Length: 316
Image (tube, rainbow, N blue to C red):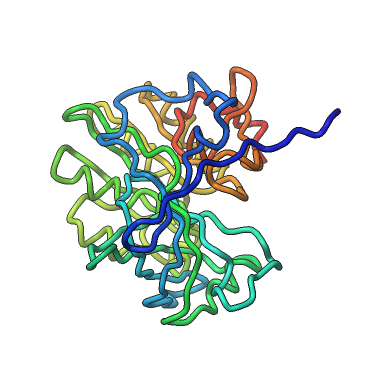
């Protein structure tokens, strides 16, 4: 097969803040249509902000128990974000010599943001797991990280008055926080969080401060109910009126959530956490198999998908 040249990206413009606009996936890969039939229901409540590429200053990188950390970044020219979007972060601090090992950035959910002069402070919750996140955990206040974002398709909004059940586990907890924030004054919302142990549980205090119904499960019983968060979902589905389920976390957890929602006749939106290298649809490294055949790109077509659109048995 003959080599195929990558499409040329459009010229990026530098804003007054120093941030550079990042080309949208459709601009970089204009000849590759987005996957169809993978989204339904009410679309996100606002257009997605245009991504930027910028060096962000580390404000804080604090351990929060176990292998969990909270990273706060000062991001010039931050355009805002929608619930469920993510950023790509360099694996470790930038220096005068560009890092090539590891080379690829890491996708991280945007937990929340705080406005600052000329931009925003962006919070990321993450877990030290591999080499890239270990390097990220070593970054210090005042150092810089390369950031691209916000990226991805946001969570669709529930219908007016529709109950929202947010089910999250592991690092997926970070993806649903802003959805809880956006829904708490607009309709009924309940949050179900799961982890292996209390030390592995992310952001519980932040969710509790929202004042929304919150239930927690840990596999060893060290926090909340002993068992799996999916058991909490079974109870929640049986307790109240019709609901839309949103979930993010380990693949097998999301698969079970999707099964429970389908059995209850309730719509379910999943936010996939596939590995990816670019974040905007060029590398094709985050392809997810679809139930109807073919593939969707998690970075561009997702990460939010209708649960029924995913071929769960073909996911790793």
